[in-house]
Length: 464
Ligand code: ARG
Image (cartoon, rainbow, N blue to C red; front, side, top):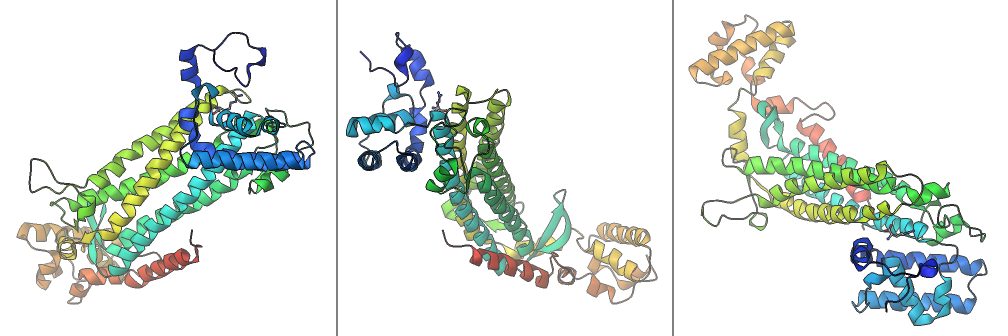
């Protein structure tokens, strides 16, 4: 006969095996085993100080938890589905190993505050790993930007060539997005690192256990303010999933550009062999699968966010078993974000930018038309008129099959008497970029200032 459930005091019948399989979480929440043990160590110390565990019992519990941890790390631990979840598996094995002291560990604690703590500890660890991945990503972008302050390419709006920009400016736009993602993770960590231990099932504990002491024991900044809130909300996990969604959205946009730029139609970038694949039928192909997969995997992360929001939306206070559905989307998101950053950062670092193709493209789409309008505006022509003149110059050049700067001075002067020979300096693409040194602009000095700021920030991050 199956062993009685740990919660089975009032039960006579046994659980239907199909339901047991349906309700178990140990197949996935065993991922929480090490943080569960860390939480139990903290709780054991707290209940020892409250007089619940003697010195000997505390030593037995701590020694037993070490032994359980070793078994898990070495793959020897026997996970039992009939024990439902990671918490009861660990506690059951502890009791097998050390006897009655193991049975005292759950005093003043419920699986409700226990699982909330475990999930918070785990989330905090993973957020720190995302921090590291984002730093590598920012460093890869900064490194490429460093090499390409003076490389020009067409900056686009509507994917139409708009104005020439520095490639460094384009790459650093992404670096700042990831930098904000990094900061969002820091903000999120403030709310993740709050201990729910001591909330017990939902109403708080009667044993005089101080939640602040538990919080200190697990290395968190503070403890909950309300026991019912502590065991029932998962907003910390949702914030993490939202942050992950933004990271993936930013990665996906960057990957989309890599995909476009790697197409021979653009030809702006050569993909590193390490992050491309060939076609089994078309020998000429070099496909940007790594970038495509990251773009594609973004969907599952959004799915996790919306999924968990939906799990929570109708739940009355406090703990409901629905909450067991909180972990898998987070685990999947963590794997996706971590792997995507681990692929994207070195891929970006190895991109081989085809700078001659980029500068040729700069000359192809009348990207200096705004310069002509600005030139006239600087000579007192109202901007709307200047815009009109420049538009006519574009039409003229287009009809002649030449660039703006290839029109004769007399042809340009035919459009406006304000145009003089110095117009050709204004029409020079490099000049157009170089003039934009106002803070945040694409001029080389402004770009260097950005780059310096990012590099200083990267340096200031303690190595993790
Ligand atoms: N496996 C459960 C979960 O993941 C643990 C908490 C169960 N608590 C309870 N009272 N049934 O949410």
